[in-house]
Image (cartoon, rainbow, N blue to C red; front, side, top):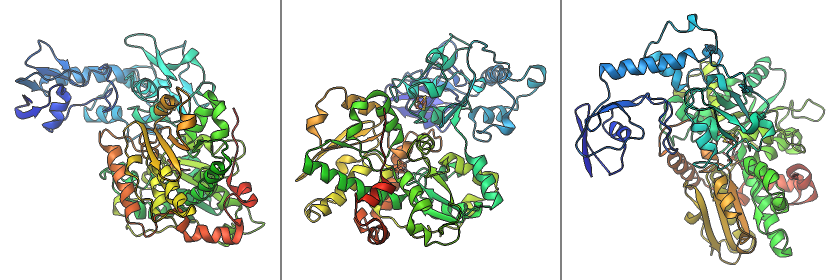
Length: 574
Ligand code: HC1
Ligand code: SF4
């Protein structure tokens, strides 16, 4: 251990800790713009410069290691003056459209400008004075991601999140050098023309509004306000364990009841649970797996509920397409059932035969779900997709006091009941664990196989495996980079019977549409909340969902039936 002081406060740290780690340990705040906990830092924003006794001039706290005995000062008049000058330089190049910016109120740069009370810059400079005539600054071509590079502060985090330190996709890289460098696509193509998989990891780390999810919330709020159509919303499993963070709650706070009450106050007529369709997915996908095992065909089966993964396969490995489960994702299944299922018609007005189809919105932790909802073959299922962040924006826009809401909200039924197995879909390994729980029942091994599969859990990037006795070996790819590693040689073809892939590390709870967070433990905490919901559920295997049973008994006959295929399955194209 090494010792240091920060503004006079003593701290003890591991070798290799940075000055920023020391400050955080001492509970001393240092402003940062280009720092993000799990990504390499470029130390370009210079906001975190501090004075340290072992160096002759100020050092960037985010990448300078502490030396034993260091005396660190973060708040001298000289540093404050430097930070102000630094920000004034950034502000001079920034457009002054904060009032209508999508990240208004949650922009790290805006917070600093407000905190330091910068002034007297905008009136003297033309709007958006960052000029790159040779580069495309605004790009709204992707169904999932919008770029506005006039807002970029050149932190480099998007390129890291999409590159070696994250998704290993390298869609975004830097053009130009030093001040004026700009994150662009190869040959400055529109994002929709690149191999971008819409995962949104770049939006999650962008400290400003240069990269955001394609916003749908304006359309949603106006449609709700008009009250011309019956409206229904479904909510993904990973949203309820993260949305509280947007309102200052601790990561891992379970906000299901509050969130449902907020959705009702926003004007949705019906509030449903995507988890209902996750249980249904397991019935369809589990049956599909057992059929393939029987026929020795298209094994291993790959899960297909992650749209970022599907995009990647279609672009890079069309040879794998026959291995993908044809089962629609829970989002699309739920939308199809809400709009066109006989079951939902029992709900009455707006759902009845001959009426306009209900207006269907989903709330997802994922930016690629916007892309998925527009795919050929499923584009009739869901009208608009909101990210968790967008839902929070809507709630704030309507002045709803989320923290003060009652916790007693309940989903509407049918299409609202779910089991613990559906809830764990939101964590890496969860879909596979849910498949195993129900497959154990299908093959009569429910009593001998465990309910909990801890080998399949965990949010750290990589490949997880488990042997399911009597069935075969399964694998989990936690993040698209892990999938690329697994597929680098051909051994997966013989080794596994089923493989789950989630494009974002941690699974949906780490999705590109979740709240932005600087807490290094955030994924872990959201994951714990997900397994807590599962643990407390009265039913923990998907086949036990009583409304799913009723749905088969009254409308779909049985899993993988012709009727089920018509409503609940899809296809993929290279
Ligand atoms: Fe997911 Fe899924 S788990 S893909 O991460 O299969 O987005 O939360 O809703 O569709 O259920 C996302 C989450 C989500 C679907 C389910
Ligand atoms: Fe890269 Fe994902 Fe961002 Fe596309 S959405 S640029 S793939 S990080």
